Image (cartoon, rainbow, N blue to C red; front, side, top):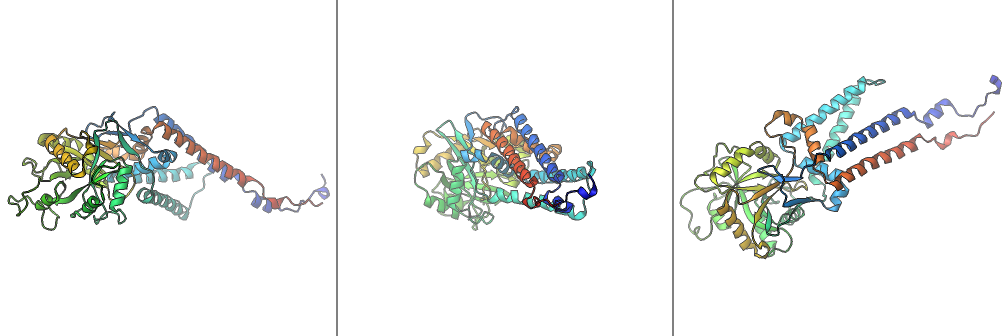
Length: 451
């Protein structure tokens, strides 16, 4: 065609390039998202070939067939969010550090791969800093959701109506390190959602929260969680919980209610009630056995704890705690150590009491105390959420960034697995539709041709 015959549509090349962006960047992002979706889907499906029970016996780490973890419908609908937030809540302090370091390491390897791939462009320090800032912001947002975002809770259900599910260690806003909004009512609601029949309010150095719980509670079980009285104090650097008769508990404490006082002569007026049950909470060093176990002062010890430091203290010493409990005939108990942060129930103590629902509150408390005191080792069964427990292995801890999500996926129910696949590919479909709209030519480039 002669040059004089060329048609000019009145649109410059620059205008066309502006109106129709280069699709290479969007295509690469879409391909990357699809690859991630395929990888996640494969992991979800393959993990289904190696299923584990979502709850286990805290002593033997074996399945407990007489109980089950019930996920409400709302929990299942948002399964990827519920499962991830629960999993993060159940990490110990060491695991949090290991997982965060692992994520940072993966980000570093990803950044190096982007430089090495064909066509990769070297990023400046500003771009790398911006990318790392996005990563940190995302992590902070997830942790904020773990601590503050209200969401459905998975709960424990028992096939035996005579089994009472108990939390022997929880707090309220009366504890200085608890969430300020964690009132007695919220404590009760949290435990009810987690499948607890009974919860002991054991605030630090005070009975105030427990007294309020008793004042607001009905005298008999009414389908909700029954709150009972307790307190958490110190003894030679260890934490101990006391539950039972408040007057007798006060008699065994110092005047400021901060420490256990094992003096032989009790104050006047302290001989009329039953002595409290003393529980060794999250033992720091059970090998030293600082507490006077042989004297019978301590009747129980925690084998499961829901606090960050408590998880580390117990999980790495599980066998020693069991041996100590067996030697001194101590009952094995669990404590959520709930301070009002998060919406995940980590453990439950199962105790069989015939027709316990017909008992009034005081009689129920007395029966629980008697069972712990007389039954000792073997009187209870502690159930906990199944987690990727590294124990004392440094290698297992270092691989937490892979082990933790794998354990989460193997514990999914069939319905949760389906919802994971639905969410993953729904996100891909939405992103595909958005990219399709971005690639469509803008109306302003369809100008009338001029000759």
